[in-house]
Image 1 (cartoon, one colour):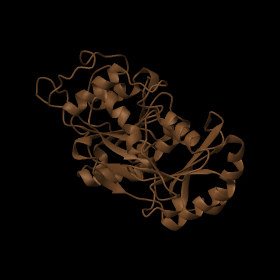
Image 2 (cartoon, one colour):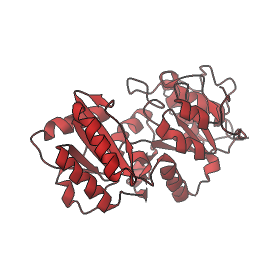
Image 3 (tube, helix red, strand yellow):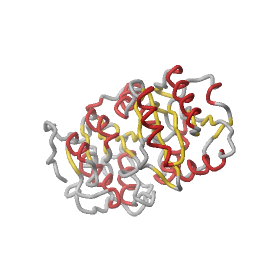
Length: 321
């Protein structure tokens, strides 16, 4: 585990200090094949068994993150839509804990521009995707569902008529059309939106852009969740790999970048794992900074594979004592 980072050094968390683990998904928790290693599952189950809360943090909506909670076998909190919303546990009905949607006038201007360019639009709420009917509707919805790896709650409705301001807007188009549309979108609403994606974000001949309020990033969502749960940011371990994770890593009490992290994450992080996302980087971080397992940079057996036997007792919980 390296602490060779450009940020001002912070003191590593003391045993029992971390109350919440915030995890990016793609490139961090999930391996390249969208699975999670048994070592990582065990480490997170151990942490939750000791009373530590876990939050998954993603640009995805709630429904698109549920397959990851299923893989973990854990009920986690969700920070969705790049930080625009935070939700409670599944057992509690995913109660909204924080939301910061796009201002409706800004959203409608972006939707109108998409119409002019023949670009398909998805407007996201916490639990629904509003999408207008078009001859290519099935192609666009299937593209997005393949990308997310699960069935999603589409509602066929013109985005201009939605009653609730969206948390996020997604634009899907032919890859050749993306550079011009992105340029005009940034010119029209770029000062009022944070825009992710580019012509390089493409699959199956299609490209995608996603937009949220200019006040939104993953740190904002993390702050909203912590306020709702009564947890100080100094008690948060955040782990990520990409530039959109930098605000979250920077504001957490202990921000960790995985070995495959970008230069921006490396500058912001308190520490960088020895392992990458394909080799249980999250397990390494949790073992080292939450469970206090010695030598956590190398594979460590902290339980039998996918064990459900963790309990917060003096005998079994590395956080206690």
